[in-house]
Length: 342
Ligand SMILES: [Zn+2]
Image (cartoon, rainbow, N blue to C red; front, side, top):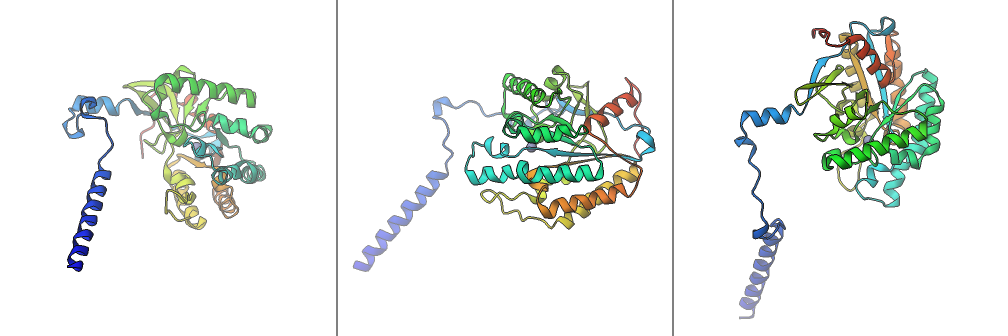
């Protein structure tokens, strides 16, 4: 009898637990009288709607020049996104250990990056969230003092543009431009959106604020003109890709990922192979890195080996993104046909 009673109690507990699990899996949505109509499902969209969607921001004409300066076969744009603590701050995460992981970029990574560029006499572009610039004014000065590097926009606090309304995005972009201009003495001419995230307004705001180029989109390996709603914007795109970014290979966030840290030699072999084809095609090689990621000892040594590999070709043009964007714009001219692919 006691055994049967125990069984019944155990069963009741199990049923109760199961129903709790099921209840807790229900999304906590609004009450039934607040429910708004569900958006149409993607397979019900008509062609006009799909076209309108994809054409909001699109790749336009190819801006690859017939030749790069001084007979170079390929243009190489090394870029460093100086995010530091802003990657955590934008998520509202402010624990000292996380912030220190970002602070490494300014304190240990950047001096190594600058020393390497100096040794090799290579200019680079640094995309700086305005808040990171405010937190590390002396680092910004160290970048600018070299007289060869460029500072470009990278958001206010590394916010995600696609989560903002147009007015907020405009305000943050203006404030970022003003802050960087005050810190560097020069108004930035190009942008890389934080996390390469784009809203439907981003490119229009870049036009409105008179920017020359963007380096956040991925529709090609070659430079191209950005189109917005079917119209040319005059904004040069210097395209990026996760393959050519240090983050996915090396970043390890203990709380949110099990991604292992890769052997730098493996990353070197991928980046070399990407460069070799860019060289063979006479194209463009844009590399995105972060001082708090690439600035670690084993990785900065790998970057130096990559620079050795590229510089050994001799006919390579190392330039800032601004120099590349100005050159391709001047070469392409207004309305000229672009070079055929292949
Ligand atoms: Zn960033």
